[in-house]
Length: 172
Image (cartoon, rainbow, N blue to C red; front, side, top):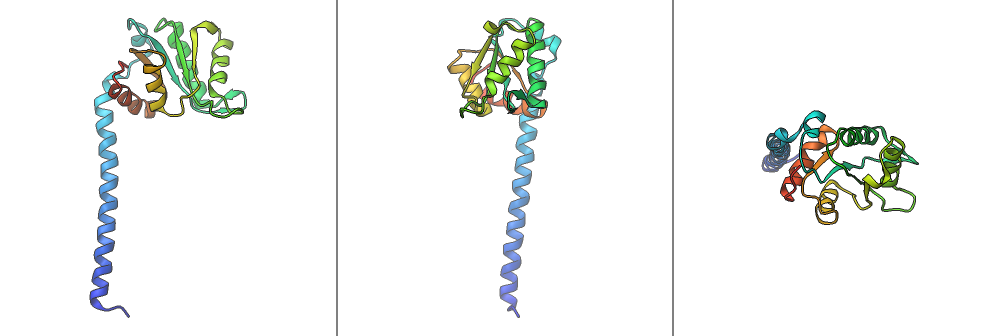
């Protein structure tokens, strides 16, 4: 049997751990709410994007491939990027994804998909080191010299992408 003082210590530790856990959850949700609130106004429709001027490129973020085919999520992104291109949002598409291994190549699968959909090969640029959203945006700015971009990804991911782009000084 535990002494009363030991029981009190255990209860205090459990209360502290539970409180810190709850505080962590509240912090995560608060940060997410903040990021959504400051980026929500930057999310635009296909029609609105087509009316923008001087867009350096349409940045399509990778989302996995299976062999020589894009995943369904990546296919959605590619189709939207292609639609933006066809509607005149920009004359360049930057495919950014993971090509860190010889046998895993998101960007060439992405380019092949776009070319098979009728996009000119010369309009498609490839970032083979887009291993994360940050790296894709950083490289769009510093390697591909883009300043004003349209980011193509799913909505849940777009808020964070726009926030990172803003912090990197990109107009997105």
